[in-house]
Length: 244
Image (cartoon, rainbow, N blue to C red):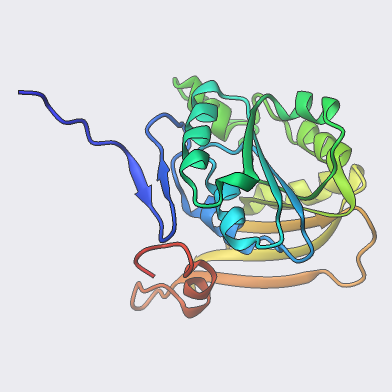
């Protein structure tokens, strides 16, 4: 008798994400970023370190004006997983994925993108895992933030936006570093797990022209008293999660 192997699949309302081959599974950070990024007047998008392809696929669902969404992934297993998920997406015709480092991609491609988005590695120190795949996903081993900023600068359109999510402390450090590469903070949303806890994540949006007024907001995921999702969080992710 054959034992049936159950595949690791995360189901969303309009698409599914296979994640059995990826070091980075579907997580709140990626969904937050994919739902939060501003898509107004965006025709092309680039997802750096696409992993399972989830953010690129979310952009495809949200962005009715988006005609081309490219994911870049250096890890071979993740690249094939993203390709699998993209081929299953209802809007697959505007999605593609490239197996390459963003450093090489940015130095070779002639295209400019209206939106560049990334849920990047963020640990710059500490103990590395025995799993190289986890190190590549979580630590800035193969993608230092300086390389990320340099690469984005090469392929971002003049009026384009660069959006990413980082832990609170790393996010503030990144804002300072981004200034050295000619990026201006355009919007920041501090994400709190509950109303009784401090912010743990920063959703950041940068442009390459001066900004008069930075949009500063706060998002709370759950109520500390009931444990239920807040109205603001439900509103942000309601088009994606099955249970919201």
